[in-house]
Amino acid sequence: KEIVRAENLWKVYPDGTKALRGVSFSVGKGEFVGVMGPSGSGKSTLLHLVGGLDKPTEGEVLLFGKSLSGMGEDELAQFRKRKVAYIFQFYYLLEDFNVLENLLIIGELLDIKDTEEKALRILDFLRLSHRLKHKPYQLSGGEQQRVAIGRALISEPALILADEPTGNIDWEEGRKIFELFKKLNEEEGITFIVATHNPDLKPFFHRIVSLKDGEVVA
Ligand code: ADP
Ligand code: ADP
Picture (cartoon, rainbow, N blue to C red):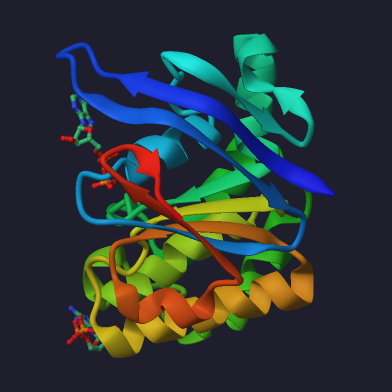
């Protein structure tokens, strides 16, 4: 079953930069797909378009068989909240709130049931149970990224888009993050699209979309 389809995506930024030049690909349910390519090749732009965070100049994105361009703002917002989760290189945690609260607040915003129970279970899975009352600044980079993953999991998304999720953490912690992703992929059936420029991460992926200068080269 197809979860994502990108058709002839072009993205031209206002300054004339052609970040994507006719990108097409599709991702099936349960896949663990890498988007790879050097810095500036268009990986972030592509993930933004797939997640509905930005609009293509030309072409279209279908998520779960529905065209994003045909959706109104409300429908798009619902999609972003409930079906798709985004994990960024920088964690964007709420600095004034502790680990548990960072998840609870999202649960409340999205009006999710049994948030506390869910949050505790997720944080246990992420091996953060001993850090519930810690604030983000008291955590290592890898731990902060695991909190961000926990926040993404609260809405029980079918698709997770991760943009250089290990870009700011060392190799050992990064590998742990990828192992958690794989576990979520295999055990929960969550589909992943992960952008990275790090070739060492290649072995984790089922399939790789290679970008160069805004085009798919492999
Ligand atoms: P990657 O994630 O592979 O590093 P990006 O998608 O961030 O690539 O960037 C692709 C190209 O688009 C680069 O040349 C980058 O400088 C340019 N770019 C990205 N965002 C913007 C923007 N908001 N305005 C203008 N150019 C941008
Ligand atoms: P890394 O090298 O991965 O960034 P750190 O050296 O920052 O790791 O942290 C190592 C351990 O110490 C982590 O488990 C982290 O939670 C803990 N730690 C770091 N800073 C603080 C702090 N200010 N208060 C409490 N624990 C901390």
